[in-house]
Amino acid sequence: MTKSHGGSPSLTLAELGPDTEEQAGLSYLRLTDAAELTRATVGQTLLRVASERPDQPALMWLTETGVEEMTWAELTTKASAAAHELSRLSPARERVVVLGGNSVDWIVAVYGASLAGMPVVPLSPATTVDEITAVLGDFAVAGILVGDRSGDGVLRDRAIRACSAAGSEAQVRVMGDWPPGPRFAICESARADDEFLVQYTSGTTGRPKPASLSHLAALNAGRFFAEGTGTRAGEVWLNPLPLYHVGGLVSGLLSCLSISATYVVVERFSAEVALRAVRETRPTFIGMVPTMLIDLLDQPDVAPNDFASVRTVLGGATDVDPALVSDVEQRLGIRFNIAYGQSEAPCMTMTWSSDSADVRTRSLGHPLPGRDYCLVDPDGVVLAVGQPGELCVRGPLNMSGYVRAGGQVDPDTSGAGWRRTGDICVLDDAGILHMRGRSRDLIIRGGTNIYPAEVEQQLSAHPAVREVAVFGVPDRRLGQKVAAAVIPVSGMTVDPAGLDTFAEEVLGPSKRPTAWLILDEFPRTASGKVRKHVLQQSITPGGVESA
Image (cartoon, rainbow, N blue to C red):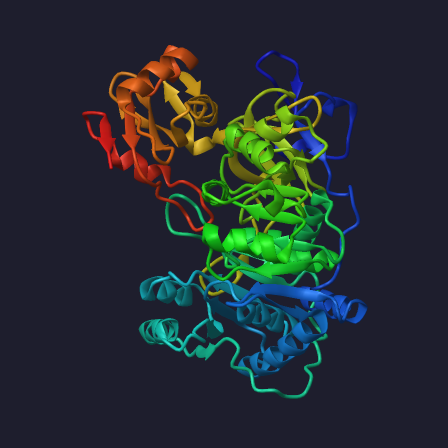
């Protein structure tokens, strides 16, 4: 036990255990045992749902003339054919790369791999030859499944070139090219704790790292997420986020699998396609990142009647502007909730429709079951409720570890099993988390801590500002100064002088930006996070840039 700065007893991460009187008043929630976990693989769960609801639609997707459906029984038959072929690639159940965008074939391939007991490594269709080559250098894979059914062969050619460059013997197969064969008997040796997914992180700096997630982690994270939305079996989910990221795969596809809901496949997002999907599939739940929702609201013919079937819209993946929440609720007449998670620890928190407007617009919401949560200072000392600190999480729904060279998973044994998220948060008396910003994004100006999220919240109230990103830039005297990048509302203009005037009205002197970027778009990761380090590099000594 250590001493806090005030002299009262404090606990470190390593000292946190079962609830004791000493832990009262600390930013610590023990939720690992708050709900019973589903102990099954993704493939086993698919077979169970198909036996219980064979004729219920598992998937829906738009065609040129309407909507098509695939039942759970049909999906399982197709996945079984894929499993039969995949198992022949690697009797040792090696990993398989899944290279492509959202599609029915992509889903069949992933479910087929799970039935065969083979972990999947999803990659964006924008992944370059050099990037694929680097993945093949990280660990051995049995095959690369590419989404090239359009016939252009671009992804297949890219995968073949990467295999050649890496000296890999991985076989390249086109998704959906599964000859009908005998029904595949599920891999009996597969267990819930086995690896299901290697998710390359969408970090905003550095090379992405391969995080290993078990069936138990991915499936239960999706399940608790789905249960938090209040969705019931048989209802329809529209979540057009990329399936090659946990936001689409875990929070979307596996959420639907875990509660037997119907997943709407959106192959390529556009606001026009999304609006048509809402009108024709009649979802009860919609999950999108803020940029998608902004584009949807900008559609000239969007109307509340289009969303009559929808109970909840959920946004996440990045900071959510409270004004966007209010705009969605007022214009569409539906509840907007916020969710938060990471590749290494998906589906951590969620606001609920029953929450107050303040909670739903200005917090990360309630920590979900399956993990323990706490906030610590830089020395690892657990902080009191209400104090900002780095969010740490532990439990079976986190990643097993990062995959190291040679393919072995390296468990994170530091911090007594706790994972440091890198996010600065506050836990309030009601057990609700509030984001203050990334620890690496923290701006220290003349010894004063400035949290970008707080500054962004104030600046986003400007009527001509659609989106804002705040970050620090070096300063010889103060260490750092505050800078901001702004995307104007469509059809409106902003200028640095006007932004300076507005900042003087809503921010204290130390928090006001001294440099501005006025842009049409922000550089982003695949999951929609703003690459602030790229913005930092765009700031010139003059302090003002437009593009």
